[in-house]
Amino acid sequence: MIVDLNLRGKLVVVVGAGQEGLKKVNSLLTQDCKILVISDSANTQITNYAKKGKIEFKKTRLDNADFLDDYDPLLVMAATDDKELNRKIVQKAKKKRCYAYAADDPDFSDFAHPSVINIEDTVQIAISTGGRSPAMARKIKLKAEKIFKEIIDKEDIYQIKLQKIARDMAKEKIPTTPERKKFLYSILNSKKIKQLLKEGNLQTAQKEMIKILGDWK
Image (cartoon, rainbow, N blue to C red):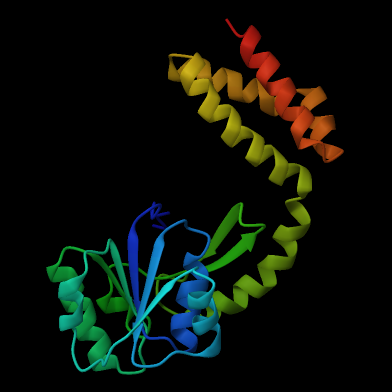
């Protein structure tokens, strides 16, 4: 079972700032969470992210997992090149009742980390082998990525963005879930809005959506 964890506004600790740690950071950048990278050294990209304020980097000697006592994260990702240390980090995180993941030990983790196809930071498609073969998950991702990027076009991306705006506004105007659902489908199926989005005119499509919402009874 693949679960899309809501990390918005939450602290995520990534331990290790090499290539594996960088992969985990890259997968978190679109999640609107607070990213803290802890390591005794960092590669160039991690350092650049820290300088730009995208993440926080704390240089710490990694002899054990006691450094986690200073933090209260929702998720801890162990990505060092020391399997024994990664296990200690996962064990410590679990004691703190955090979700825990070790890059080199999915069976010991709370979940497997899928390969993700990211389309314009709006659509994420996960490819997972349930931890059986991360290498094959990555290989299948590369095969599938081209196909999905052809299927999901700009109009779909605009529609998703419009649906998010419509959904938030409908919560204020339409009291019941069934009626909100009807409204959102009316936006999805509106020929006028479809044409506007096809032309790339999201702003005008939003005005049309607001008009439909204003007339909704």
